[in-house]
Length: 584
Image (cartoon, rainbow, N blue to C red; front, side, top):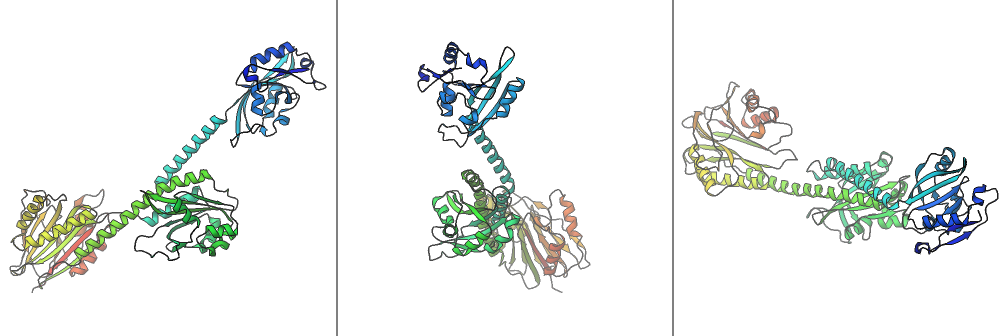
């Protein structure tokens, strides 16, 4: 073949020119006799198509390229002819094994090739889909025809979709493994361990101190509390000298953590030398330890929830691990955002929990004093760490006629509102008890007052009024569990006090119940947190309580009851009152 049709920059406007080349020595005769007319017709058909088309001989040398392929390769059409694919575009993985297989057996094939041609491209890597079939004449193989379409954009979209799916899968997994409790330190440790398993060789979670916890350093540095630290086994020993959970760390101005929180976005520090690492670190004293551990890359991500900063996560990679990149930063920021909400929830819960506990302890610390002939003991045990404090309460009132009132109640619900409602019930009881003679009348008056004041939290309550002079004790219940009397012979008996409706419902009626109040008998009042169990009938729970034998002093009885009956990790608060009539 002495001339070859090829398009130049004007080919897209329908203009083209014949490009003459000398046929390489030894070429098959077909290429020598390819007429100008054939080349012209082929050019009219193929130069205008958006598909890149090439004809190659059996040695994989270009014999024809259209304008699209020339533009795609960034090489003029004439400079293709007589040269192999590897010579024209050495940066492309052209899958010559597939092309030679088509020449050998004649079976058409499709394949994906990738790399970079001589044409400029902003893409990190380009991809092409090629379809090839063999050319034959008179039973003789002449070469192959290839039709190539660039699929870089589609491939990039596919990769982005795959990355999005991976990020979603990672976030779904994190949702089940991070934030499993309302304890802040536990949540931080879960986050650090998850990041080490998925993204980093080591991870540290630090949080901003709560107000009043620690003073702000005077040198302008930023103080954070290191809450959690995790590392792969190879780094675990080396990371120990760098700090431990619970201590405060002051970060120098301009350090990576400070820059991260000021900008509100991730900071990537890669391939740091000793000076860079000293500038990025919290303080320069740890630089030698970082270098000794082989740390070469760091990623710091802010923990931000509901518009305010919670803390930071610092991840590092060492040894043969790759450097952090923007994709890692996006994934880490997604994880940190989810975790920050859990941390903020934990901090809010902890703040409310501590406030409620302090309020409840203050209210329960000073119950009224009984008359001297009644020995009374109290005990309060809050629910497990993951449960909001409830509204359990108790009270003792020494009445003017020598009687002593004992009361124990449980406001429905948990949290600060339940604790506040508890204080309201307690205060009302003291007022009503001074003017009403019997426990049933006291409950009726309390119910009326709470109903008329639109109390939105009903409560159960049991009242016992001990009358030592008459040797009796009178009871009334507003939906509460029955009292227990422990007799001197060691037997325990549930008292059949009729349970009326809970307080606060309005228009209720309560019935009193009177039983002997003899010296040596010990009365026990308790809230449902003591005996209730999931998947257990209440009668079985009460039976467990009455199986306790012995009649110790009130303080000892409470210890015995909590030891033998109370659950190890109660799901609800437990309040107990034990009283013994001591008059001979």
